[in-house]
Amino acid sequence: MTQQNLSQIENGRQTMSYDQRQRAGSVFGIASEDLGLSPGRPHAELYPAEHRVPDTPLIAGPGWIPDEPADLQSLRLTLDEQPQAVAIDGSEAETLPTRPLCAPDQPVRQI
Image 1 (cartoon, helix red, strand yellow):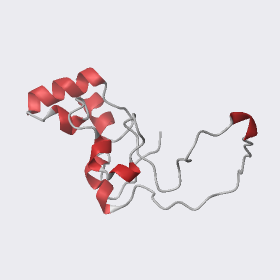
Image 2 (cartoon, helix red, strand yellow):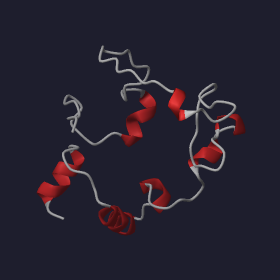
Image 3 (cartoon, rainbow, N blue to C red):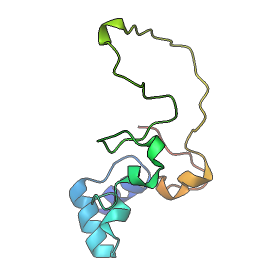
């Protein structure tokens, strides 16, 4: 890995491949689970049963899963292209450990 490549990863302009993450974990002694490389404990298990989608690793909020399957022919989708308010935008303190490295006065470039 070159200095330029590392700089691009730190600035969020390039992502690390699975192999690069494995190597970085080995070189720096970082646990595979911390790099998202091994299944470890499924994340859905961290949530109460009422939030887990049965037989999947997914979670869902209250009211998101119907009591019985929906007839797909009865569903109608519409597109609303108006701006929508967001409850979470990634700037929350909880996201700090997962954000790409960048200078404090520079926003992360969206890819």
